[in-house]
Structures are given as C-alpha cells and as structure tokens.
Image (cartoon, rainbow, N blue to C red; front, side):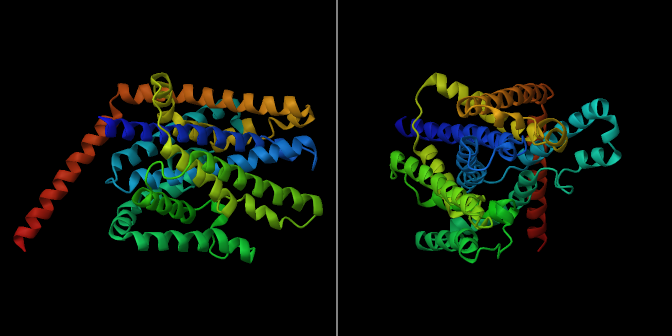
Length: 370
C-alpha cells in the first residue's frame, strides 16, 4: 500500500506541474501577445517585472515535453488519445471560426475553415504539430531508451544537451535549426531527457530546495543577461538565453520537473483540485492560442497595463492570467462533459482495440503461411 501511495502522489505532482505550466504559458501570452512587454519603457520597473515573469515562465513548454517523455517511456502509445486530441483541436477551431464569422465577418474566409479542419498540415498550433509528429515516433524512441544501459543513457543526455542547448549559445547562431525551441526537434530532445530521467532518477534523490534554487538561478541568468543586453545596447545577443532551448531555461524547466517528481501530495482536497484541472490544460492551450483569438482578442489587449504603478502592474497581470485560465478551463470542462456524454473517448478506445486485434490476427495468419 505504501508503494501505491507513492506512485499516486508522484503522478499528482506531475499533474500539478501540468497545471502550473499552463498558467505560465498563459502568462507568456499575456505579456507578449497581450502587448505588455512591448508597451513598457526599457529598463523601467514595469519592464523589469515583465521580463522577470517572462523568463520565469519560459520553463513552461519545456516542462510539458519533459513530462511526455517521463510518462511515455514505459508505456505503449495509445493512438486513440492522439485522435481525441486532434478532434478536440478541430472542435474548438471550427466553433471559434464560426463565432468570428459572425463577430468579424469581413476577416473570415474559406481558408480559415480549411485551417480549422487541417490544424496539423496548416500548423495552426506549433506545439500540437510538433507533438503529433513526436507521438508517431514514440515507439521507436522508447525502444532506444529501453535498450540503452545507464552509461549510454547518461552519454545520450549529455550529447543532446550540449548539441541543441549549449552549442547554439557558444556559436551565437542556430546551427542545428532548433528554431528557438519552437520545433519538433527540440520537443524530441526534451522527450528523450524526460525518458532518460524516468530510467535513471530515483525519487527524492535530489533536494527540492536545491532544485528550486536552480529554477531561480536559471531564471535570474536569463533575465540578467537580457537586461544587461538592453542596458548596453549589445544588439540582442543575450536574448539567446531567453529561448526555450537555452541552457538557462532548460535548467529552470528541468528543476521544476524534478520537484514535481519528488512531490508527495497527500491532501485529499488538493488531489481533487488537481484531478479536476489537469485534464483541462490542453483545452486551455487550444482556446487561448487559437489564431483568431490571438489576433483579434488578445493582441495588445493588456498594453495599457504598462501605465500602472509597478504594484498594480504586477497584480493585474496575475489577475488577468487567473481569469483567462479559469474561463478557458470552464469552457473545456463543458467540452469534456460533452465528449463523455456521447462516449467519444470510449468509442475511439474501442476502435483502436478492434484495429489492434485485427492487425494481430493478420500477422499470425501471415506468419503461418510463411
């Protein structure tokens, strides 16, 4: 019973990180697409607050991909879940496009509906496109991770970290086309690091206080170099440290990831909240990053915050993030209930099981003929 409780607590720690990471992603969008960073005066107190928040929240996307590797390496990919995610994306894209065809009729064309139905090929959501490709390769990546011994796993972790995170900083150019971390390549690197952690890391072997210090150190390094860059007009070279694949951001994200693995959540109330919010995080992402919402609702919506005092500036940013997160979560909760009502998840799961059985029978028949 004790070991079962540890596994459950560990899972809830990771689910909690999913929730926190999504709130951090919303923060990034409020700061950047919302016009806050653009609206602040360089080196002002508001500029400082905005960029500290930005650098701290850049760890969010890395956390998601690390989690995918950690929970995925020991499991067989379930393709009905990928299909369900695709349907969820199309569901929201079509509804949002239909709503905007009424409120912004002149801006909506046939291309908007084509993009809604074909989110992967049209790259409507960069992370979902990258994850979709990664999902199809997971069986092969998992086979590699499971086949390697501990020494080889450590070597692999060191090689991909140096190649795709450290070398771009040293050379000051994107030599391997990681695209600042907005790419399938970087998501795959993080998946491997998450899987390697699952194979090598023992829960509790790293101190959470030390890991939190590492998170702060990564955030501080990214901010300090960028702030100095702006102050000295150094042509934005140090902005490299604020990219998803920078060593500073990788350090801060990986530190939060380890903390989530170590967490031993026992509060029943906390567990219930986590279990309610965690399944809704992908919906929060899809809703608030929809291209139409990004362009017509969020674009520069919070720009006037830069005129506030530093205290009100900070409070209103936090309040805006919480409101957006809760509204999107509420909307996705309705979607989740609807999908369950029509038994869509179960139907897709049953369909995958039937296809798997048929393929297995075909393989047996072919082997017998041979």
